[in-house]
Length: 83
Image (cartoon, helix red, strand yellow):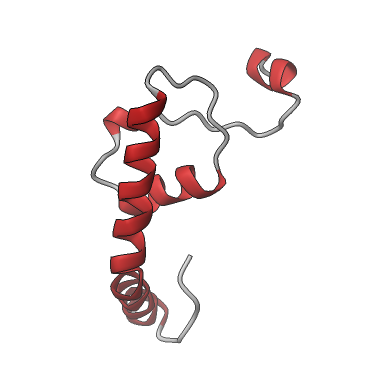
């Protein structure tokens, strides 16, 4: 068990440095919608970025799901739900 897991009481912690992953909308949405902030240097910026990510995800989620469905069908030859 890592020190962060011991301190937080959470298990299976994945740390994501948000200022390094702006290219991955799905990762950002997952972090902002289900993640628990460990350290936030600028709360106003964090909330602004969270709003932007959720707004973008809601705008593009339909297209992302279509893309994932088509990709899975192409790879597996069958229809499945997106991740």
